[in-house]
Picture 1 (cartoon, rainbow, N blue to C red):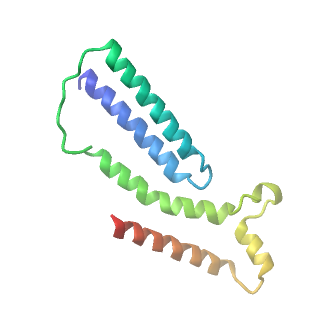
Picture 2 (cartoon, helix red, strand yellow):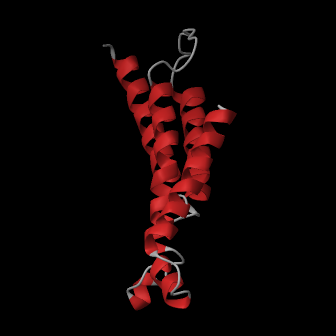
Picture 3 (cartoon, one colour):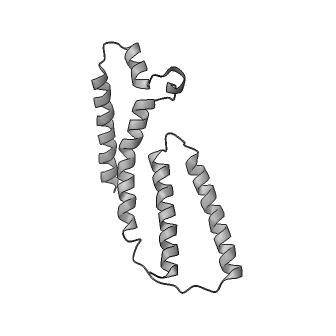
Length: 138
């Protein structure tokens, strides 16, 4: 592998990791997507300045797609749905840091006639609905 290919692989790896972190933990740190866009725009500006001022014109190579990276992105997009629903189920509104209870436990304390397995089944059903929606849109 030549040096240009290694640089390209490193760039793709950085973008895939950033995509994974943002999609997996979107409900935990919603502002991360804003900072991701901001840093990507800044990095593009720096790279463009560097390319126009300090280097020769690169040879253009055609490509039909992003190759195996697309499979990784699809896998991350598929896995992020259950991860986000699990985060919502176990932490809920974030009050677990104060009281030590999750939102499901709070719901059960307010409505004692519900069973925790029904709440879990509801979360799993909604999560599967979102997965089917994602497959349908793909």
